[in-house]
Image (cartoon, rainbow, N blue to C red; front, side, top):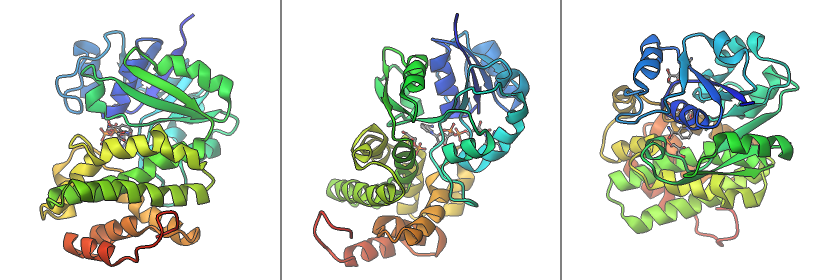
Length: 333
Ligand SMILES: NC(=O)C1=CN([C@@H]2O[C@H](COP(=O)(O)OP(=O)(O)OC[C@H]3O[C@@H](n4cnc5c(N)ncnc54)[C@H](O)[C@@H]3O)[C@@H](O)[C@H]2O)C=CC1
Ligand SMILES: O=C(CO)COP(=O)(O)O
């Protein structure tokens, strides 16, 4: 018997993952926008978020959270981080007992500083919680480009069962038991992607981008390990892998935000012109608090925070980084 997937969130990544699972399992996707629901059901497209992409024809869309989750064997959450709690609370009364819940979002909740699986565990205690993450730019996956991801869950047996629901010939899903590390890798790299985009927008060059990626990895690993992630996780798909993809791609929304800042646009203008989420903008706020709480040095994230929220210019950010003390590569700083 085929497993049933209920996926909440009809944006670019939610729709992409639903189209992948529809190949292996009966999948219903919930989108709050009635037009998107009709378009997915009638035309098997979601042009607003995935222009020119053809979705798996068996994918069913619904406007009802209840209908989407009530018979599901697995719940997948493709909602941006700041809205995750609200949507999960709405779904809660309709979710069957003990059903695994998998997060796709790459961010931290501003008001609580929590990871998404912590929110799942808080709202839905007893349900196995996991994360699907890695270098997975949605717009590439639809056009036949191969990619690899990781599903992280504490329970290896459940992770292995779910691995086959998300996998296809071109989408290779590995398992990992380090939920904290995998989830933090995805959230923290978005700020570094803004920094990399900013360098690209300001024509800083390839060496600068490489330095941002490498030193960015060092600082997100420092915080990630302090928060309980495993060091090795940050060298894997959820860390280095996602960092490289996002920091070097014009398809990344976080890179785009940085690029436009580097070109001299204001954050307000950039956000107003986008119809998609760039999680790093909000995560930067949380990360500054976490860096303080865990006493971890995060020079790149700090400079990005100052550009986003304290009126610093892109030039100030580069000057700030160049002034930062150069220590040993193995030590903080
Ligand atoms: N697009 C990508 O390539 C990837 C995105 N992600 C992550 O997936 C998460 C979702 O991102 P995308 O789908 O790309 O975003 P998106 O900006 O393309 O779409 C967001 C979707 O969430 C819906 N939404 C927003 N607030 C809502 C609310 N309060 N209630 C119900 N629906 C709401 C919007 O209507 C939209 O359908 C983000 O955390 C992102 O970091 C992860 C991997 C790849
Ligand atoms: O996480 C992503 C790719 O792995 C998507 O990045 P953006 O949200 O910056 O587009």
